[in-house]
Amino acid sequence: MHLTVNEWCTFCERCQRSKKGSKGKSPMGHVLATKPLEVIAIDFTVLEPSSSGKENVLVITDVFTKYTVAVPTTDQTATTVAKTLVNNWFVRYGVPQRIHSDKGRCFEAELIMQLCEHYGIEKSRTTSYNPAGNGQVERFNRTLHDLLRTLSVEQKRRWPEHLGELVQVYNCTPHSSTGFSPHYLLFGREPRLPLDLFLGEEPDRREEVRPMDWLAGHVQRLKMAHDRAGERQREAAARRKERHDRGIVAPDLCPGDLVVTRQRFKSRAKIQDFWGERLFVVKEVPGQNGGPYLIAPRDGLSDPKRVTRNEIRQYFERPTVQPLGTMEAPTVEAHREPEPTTTEYLEWHIILPSEPVSKIPVRVTPPPPVRQPPVARPTATAPPPPVRQPPVARPTATAPPPPVVPHVVRPAAPAPLRRSTRTTKGMTKPWN
Image (cartoon, rainbow, N blue to C red; front, side):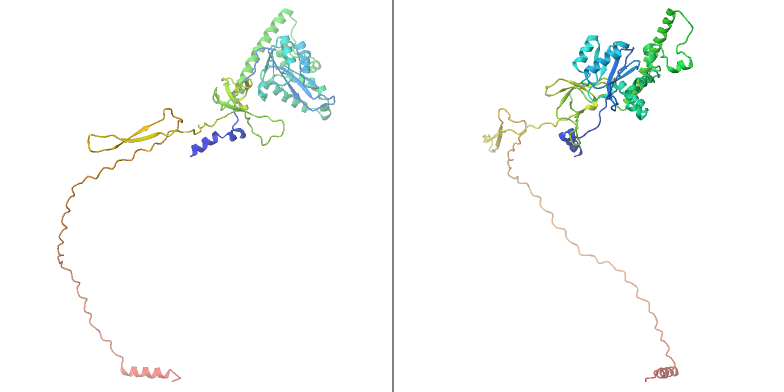
């Protein structure tokens, strides 16, 4: 009974759509680069409105060097994104090979696609509702919020004026993943800070050498720094993956499984179903390095899409039972066939229809058994009753007579004593 109840709950449609269920988890993937300007990641973060009316910040960061630029904007349109990329990154640091972002409308607009095509840039994107797919720029947003939180109340109202200085502090600080500052990995030298001028020190102060010798040494030092930074980034990524993938086994979904997608509501939806009504079929599963699942709608009315594991849930359909159709009953005939012997018996023939109407078996009543006449069996004579013998008198042991106890006569009291007793007895009664 326990297995039956468990099976019923597993196939329950309302339970599968309304209950949250266990959160799925897939192996962790990474967005890594091997050289500067190979991949840049972009994203918007929204802050409190400033005195100038700006509340949006477009963050652009280089994946390899961690060098970051933050530009305050008034809106999040595709035109603003295109102008910011060209004026604040392309003309200053160069054109990247690939731009990575989420699926925001401002990043997936036709204008951005034309910009990438014009410069020969590849465009990549994360899956829906997956901030971890653009984790590096999301991590910088948290650092930027911490830096802005240290400002005074008056300075927070004018945070766009202090944004460049705070980002410069980040770019000049050695990064824990690379061991070098983002400025050094991008430009090959440490920046000259106001503190260096105050102390009279220069970051790269050396003896005077010929320009070619300095260039050769500079290229060699920069190459060693890039190699070391790349090695440390891979080690840090492996540590993060090990912590994230603890307890994760092989993908629990296989191609061909049915899944439902998580529903997202913009308004109040406290009693709505967690999972949608539409069914999807799993087409591809990620490998050992993680990644999204490729699913396609079972009805085929839309294109396949890629989603993360926590956005889908496996769906179990209850096995369908074929309805009972019109069943043609079998014909049963009975006839007698003569036998050479004098004994006759009934032979039953079951004539089934040519084509069965239903796959459900039909119970056929078997013929009644033929009762045979009883066979006379010789009866055994009962043995004569045993003769009872008269009981034999056995001598009984008589109990010995009780011992004769002689009667001892109690001596009578003397006569004078009896008289005195009567007299005394009569005198003690005053009413006599």
